[in-house]
Length: 141
Image 1: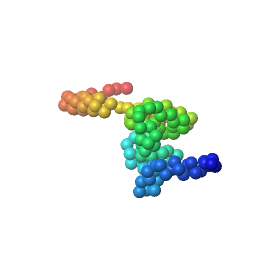
Image 2 (image 1 turned 120 degrees about the vertical axis):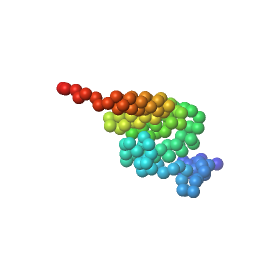
Image 3 (image 1 turned 90 degrees about the vertical axis):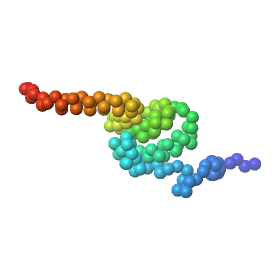
Image 4 (image 1 turned 180 degrees about the vertical axis):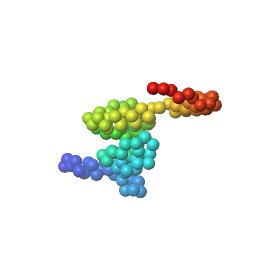
């Protein structure tokens, strides 16, 4: 029996994957769809993946909670989506701007929404009390 070529093995593998109506196994990998999404729209990045594409890949190849390594993290789309899906993440990025954006987006994704809401309420109470007390005296430099 003749050994199977790499190409024929790939075709065989591709036939095992379901193909949605779009004709591909995954959502569009382009960043363009991120332009309207919270967190992801903050930093447009031409080389970035769409969050839908990352979600599809995580669901297909890492259905159980695990560790996601992104050696070229860019602005963190893969890392953010992995964290939101409950995975641990490790990312590397040489571009300082992209690394800063990635860290910022990861911090935002990890905010405790209930605690944030409580802090906003405290601020609004302080603001209302300060307004009710009348004008504040002007300070001199």
